[in-house]
Length: 281
Ligand code: SF4
Image 1 (tube, protein in one colour):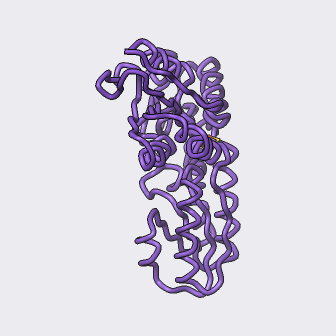
Image 2 (spheres, helix red, strand yellow):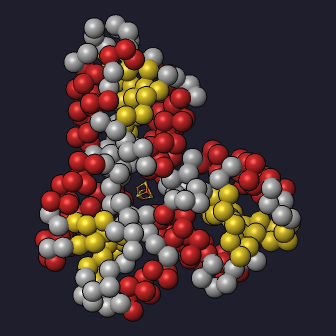
């Protein structure tokens, strides 16, 4: 069976993940052993390569003074940085500048508004970090990830709103409208990541119109990959795969056009392998 493969211009790592990995590699070269507070990349093979260089992943902070810890591209709470300083740890901060921007806006709104709403997934480490910055001067913080949750918010006089960087912009705007209906005055800071928005737009405007079936490549733990797969699935049959080994011939028919896109934390070589697997069908 042969299929035609269509791949948009932007796939593979975004600059935030690429730079975070570069800083982690540099820390490994300098310090030998480095402890990552969370997953530095949502790809098993990329992670294994770093682990073979001395990376260890931990949920809790090490107690040994002088240990090197990496804060991932998703960022962390101000309390975590303080605790690390207090323990005498060396902190390699690889927070993406666009996540740092969300944190700065959240912190600013927290100083001037009564309540800060963070639109995003509460279990995601970026959101947990942003909540920490929003509440750092004592503001009340609410987290919502759906229209239903926004509709259940109590009525308030004033609210400030920020968004998890990788949250789909279209859904963010819909949620903001519901928040407006529950609040007097609302200050909205659209902190969605333009790289993620561009991939969503690229998929919707060109890729989906052109293809019969879509492959979205990326870790299942990656929020932006999952959101991209959901967007594609609304329009075309879509398969979210982590690697080429997951590509199944029964998903395709001869002569079909297959679109391949990826999340921002997916290495380009993994997308290349998926493309090669589709071409070899
Ligand atoms: S997806 Fe956007 S916010 Fe997240 S790491 Fe990449 S550039 Fe930064």
